[in-house]
Length: 625
Image (cartoon, rainbow, N blue to C red; front, top):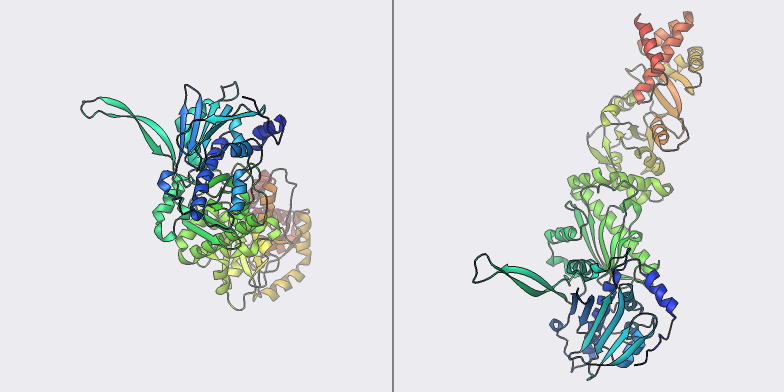
């Protein structure tokens, strides 16, 4: 029998396809099963227009059989089969797809989508096989033919015996090498795992024979070996079922089966889109943060299926970074895949799906916030930080999408509140949305800078996350109300004592100048405070960088030292003010002692480190002496 050469490409091209197109060898099984599914689909299509052909779904399946002794893996199907000419054209010409041609001929018919459009998937078998034998009998034909090839050197086609319509593919699996274990493709448990991973939702049964032991009917404590045929795949995916048929438990079970997480999802979204792009999706909002979520190792993305066949484990392009916590899958027939079906061509369909998914996630979170506050707060404890990062990133480009989803602890409500809730109860005379930053709620509550704001009856939002202040700097204003730190130089509050403070500032200009000079550039200014009521001293800031931002930025790796423009504020209604005045007039050494102590106090209140703790303790001792 004369060996024929592949018509389209050289040995080098076939080797390139085998070694380069597919990143994982296990993909071969997905490709061959998809081809078998296509072959059955073609009978379904023909039955639509041929009254003499009855399509009884129970008669159609794919069978996978491994023989360790012979080192063969066999896939047989009850599909449409191939004639000699089709074997020649479909398998003898690399990158010519019979499925693609069939699809074009039947474009107008409703029914199943044909997956294999490129004509290269079959050749992935050579990644694991030394020899591939295809025996096929076409529908309506009395003859069967065998196609056989050991790789790029060519192939043979000869008459063969086959009782039933369909195709049988026998792979002679390669021997193991020092670097490669091919035995795994002869192990039933491994084959089953690959089928479940990639082809679980092929619409026809994928069958395998499994061996086991069971008690003998007539023997005590005796067991017998048995073998039974089992269907490996689920066939009907949950996302193609009507939502009315499904319960929360069904969605939870799917979440667990797909191993999206070990928690119970807070919420699910089931999308069946039929518009500019057709797709189905099931999205989950998890309850708990994955252990690696806030690390570089975490990989975002949704599972992507094309007509029920898994194409990508993690399609990152379907989720924006700020919604990277979402788990789930998308299945579409409209995707433009590349030749290996492993990668997506970045096209309009993908962008439309991603845009729709983003909108659905936001709507679901808003609904959760409005109707199930306790559940939303549980979610927010896990993933609120990511939403705030989303506001900050890309120079605030996503702030309009995310700002209504943010929550912050309220000084008035003593719980988390939204920006909308805060603004809705602002007094008419309140100009700003006030916030205070610190390491914890307890520390913020003790900050001297909050006194005047709270005294006016204004609500303060407590920022305890590193990212909080950076996020609101990007938002800038919410419903025409700007954000204002309680440590800001100008609070926009007209205090009754302001006139007195300004008079004291003018009268003691020399005192404050002397204190500023004694601090040697550690502060930008020293002045009478308009915000302190009972505390003697505090630090405020001028400019865009606050003290909390200074801490965060300086804690970053390889950061250059960042300094906020600090102002030392003195409460002119406190006893220490009189002591400062007296020292300024009579004892410059004591003034220096008092100034350094007050500055150190202000640093400690802010949680900033003392440059010289020994000097501070010595100053305290001098006061006590």
